[in-house]
Image (cartoon, rainbow, N blue to C red; front, top):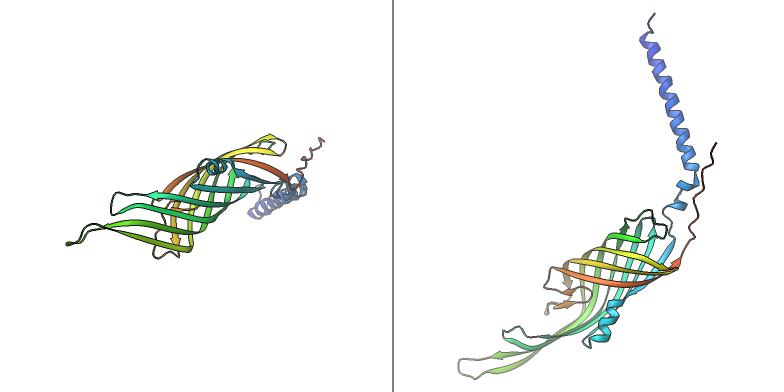
Length: 250
């Protein structure tokens, strides 16, 4: 005798209930496994603090450019919170071949970047990195332009006029797409490099003078700008990374 539709319904319901019970039980066991808790995933294990070597070299070899930068990152599993802070002072000569000649431009300010990196070397026990990332950057600075302008009227000889423009408390912002590596050399000591594609610069609080050079960014007239850092880091442990427990064979 073939089973009735009601019997088939209750049989299917019983099978579904058993399958759900097994699934829930497995999930509870999985949650109870300390290897899968946040203790082993998204709690930071170390803070890296370093500096850009190229900035130091530029400051020592170019008397018109004073620059230093501090870099830091904190790991959350494969994700890293990255923060940079720097100082920038630059003097430049301007001669664009038009009415403005023998001009000089100088700025002095601070800048910072905040963003995140994603590490693609997931199984490296030393947490070496090949990463891609993103930054939001901001700069606050003062700048001054001094220049001479040739003027010739219809009834006068050439006249040289000295002009000056300045602005204080100027703010600028931009975005960056980053890529780079971090490599552990010895315990605590790391080396790395970062390439930066800087995008979409903008500024405020300078109505009478367009920035020629933005601290932390570069030439304002360039809508995209490349940057490169060669960095040395020291890593300070925040939490000791515990070994994952080994499942016992039954």
